[in-house]
Length: 72
Image 1: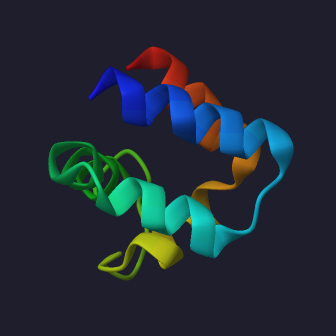
Image 2: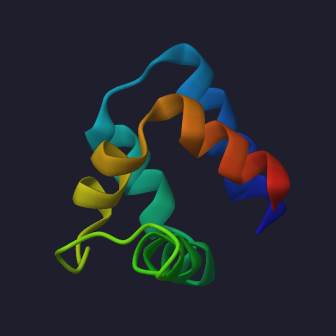
């Protein structure tokens, strides 16, 4: 779990494309579930359900994604 988090943070720092981030995220199902649960929580108040990792990464953005990963 920690290895994937560190790798994702590194990829975000390097500004890699969303496809690479998505591939890395798919390697850890529990982390991927946490991301979707986080974005679909009432705190975000999104009018649609986020069901894909790509959509989740695009909605969150690189800066907020890095902060979320740092909290984990």
